Length: 95
Image (spheres, rainbow, N blue to C red):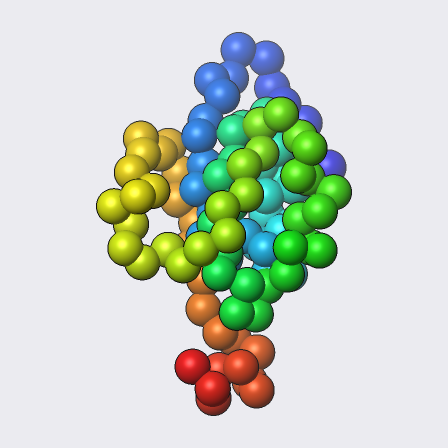
């Protein structure tokens, strides 16, 4: 688990596709680092179950929607991770 270092500024992080397998672990790591995490996922291949343990965390926010258009997700963001996309072959062929 990552440890928060002293005197480190809290960052605001956007994780698109954050309810997927990799995204949910990234959200967990960013929270452990001490950051604020906004997780956006349309649940095409991800699942709210993947982030359920994080939902009540005070620095975690889950938005269940597509990342397009980004207008409604205006920052400011310190970091953006785009993990949104159908990488699972059966879903990839459908989208």
